[in-house]
Image (cartoon, rainbow, N blue to C red):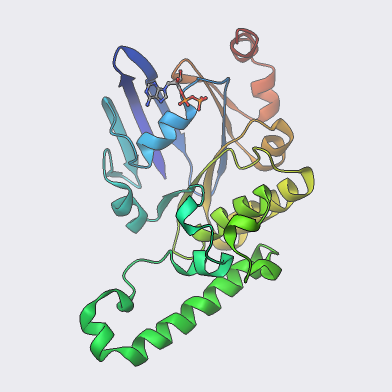
Length: 250
Ligand code: ADP
């Protein structure tokens, strides 16, 4: 689904991504690991259109998508999860989900005057969809809770839920497990596996928790110093001398 060819991202003289090439196969849950500073997040941000690359190419399903802005990639089903912005923390979990789809009729003045019924119908459909997503993620009891009041792990589930409000094809998840307790981390893992198996989502996941990576991801790609060191199952990666050296060297 995604091919990255010889990607570079320089910040001044610093080469955060330095010739990274990789493939993310359709239907996979691909893990991206590597020591701190390896360039994983920067690579994600370039693929997701948040940062322009210095050079190199990103291809999605055969189409060159290098440097396209996030909203265009969103339209193609390529999503990167983001933390819920502070401004939205007083809105309920359900409202946070309902905000995601673009192009709702309620946005135009014309529709405000002439399309009241349609807006009401759309809002009802969106609400039903949001409730379905909350149920899928086993957090339906949080529907009326302000998003700012729920736990870190529940917020991560909500971030994942936002990708379910649109027709996502590939979702990039950055450190889903950071600061999340084991039980919720398992719930997040279950949701990812179900989205992959039942809805055909492809995932690329950055995560430091190796149990989580081992349970979910095949293949696992290890980056260090801005490029790909090794790819394989987690066991193969763990046995790779270059990988061991990269982790020990930090
Ligand atoms: P990882 O996600 O693997 O920990 P990052 O992609 O976050 O790595 O960072 C790779 C390197 O690029 C780090 O040394 C980081 O300090 C540097 N870096 C990231 N973003 C910027 C930026 N906006 N300006 C300067 N340096 C940056």
